[in-house]
Length: 334
Image (tube, rainbow, N blue to C red):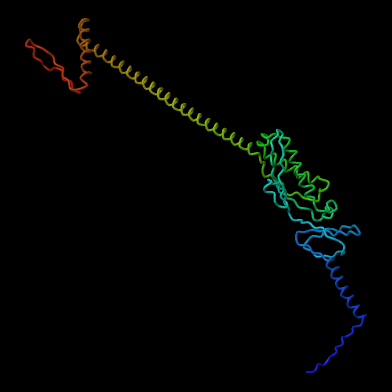
């Protein structure tokens, strides 16, 4: 098979047209880059300002959600205007961006106290441009909010003793919260630019040995209270028993006196009745003094026998006659 050479000629593009095509591509790329650098978008809850380094101007705040345009060489400074939280917690818990180690301060008597606190705040978005002028890195929290909290806690705790802190912890917590809020509101760098919404002192953490000593003291106080209560209970029981005994004795004494009076009255009545009966008997018999005495003895003797006979059936026998026959003359039955 024979080889047949074939000649292929390329299409010749004019040099001017090729240069125009390259320029168009470059212009398109430049326009795309310029457009991407000139358009910005902000999500909800974010505020931003446009900073023009050429003119040195800072725009008014723009709050998201929003889409806007800026000079390609200008840049954005953003921050959130939602509620933010700064937490002062123990070192082992301070891991997040907004979690800081809790201040460890000394009381007036030299005891170390760790203060846990939470601060809730938000910026004023309408004045964000003023905040950026003072804090271009938007680090007002690290430069003002956190150091001010540490300093305030140190100033308050250093003026009180441990005992006073324990006894008035709620009052001291409210003092720290109020003074911190006032300090931020009156700070020349943040006044009117940041609103402190809430300050909450969570806990005053004492050293372990101090906590153990307090627990032992509380336990001893509780034991003393229980012992005092038990002593009072025993004393009250003793007083109640004494009162009950005294009342019983008084009641028995009153009853004895009453019985004695009744018996005395009864004896007096019996004596009066006996005397009256004897007088009537003597008068009826017309007895002389000797006979009257004998009649009185006999009457009293028979009355005594009658009382003895009340314990059972008794008969009184009189002995008469020379033969000594026993004749029942006075039957007495119960």
